[in-house]
Length: 128
Image (cartoon, rainbow, N blue to C red; front, side):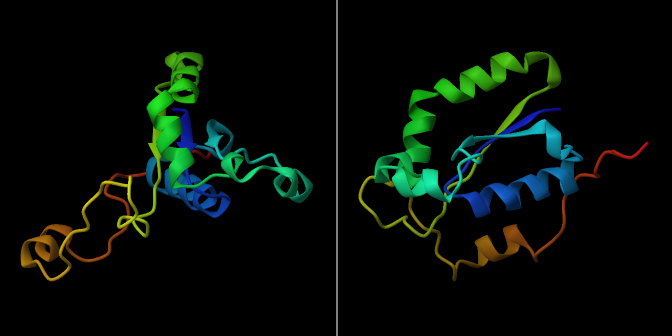
C-alpha cells in the first residue's frame, strides 16, 4: 500500500505518517508528502511567499485542482494507493471554510464517538 498525504503543516504530516504506520502498517518509505513539500529546509521556507506555505486554503485548493492527487494515484495504481487529507477544524468559523462545527453538548455525538481509542484495524506485520 502507498499513502499520499495532503496536510496543513509539517507536524501534521509527521503525526499522520505515524498513524498510517501504526494503524495500517504502511511503511515509512511508502508514504509520500504531497502538500506541504517536506524536503524544504528553513532557508526555502523563509524565501517562500505566503501562498506557497501550507494552510487550510492550500489544502482546499489542492483538493479542488486534484493535480497532485491524480498524479500520485496514477503513479502508484498497482500499489493500492490511498490519499489522506488533513484539515484543522480550528478555522471552521472562517469565511470560505464552510464546515459547521458539531454541538459538543449533543448526547448523540458523544455516544457515537465513544471514548478515545486506538486504531480500529489491526496493523499489518511489517517485520520480516
